[in-house]
Image 1: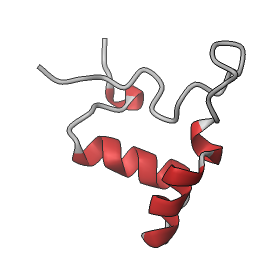
Image 2 (image 1 turned 135 degrees about the vertical axis):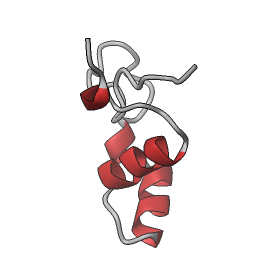
Image 3 (image 1 turned 30 degrees about the vertical axis):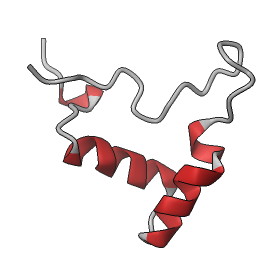
Image 4 (image 1 turned 90 degrees about the vertical axis):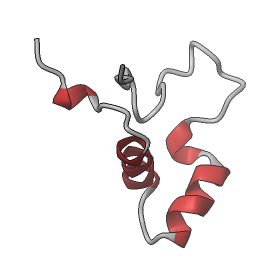
Length: 61
């Protein structure tokens, strides 16, 4: 069984949990991404792919 990422770049809607920073603006993912010469979005998508998580664009009905 494989996991499908519902929202691979995180929830961009602050209504759901305004106490958490948005993924693309969080300092920890930014630190990892910059160390690899990537944007946070690129790093996050690459992490999902390398972890075997299916991106929503890969789904078929």
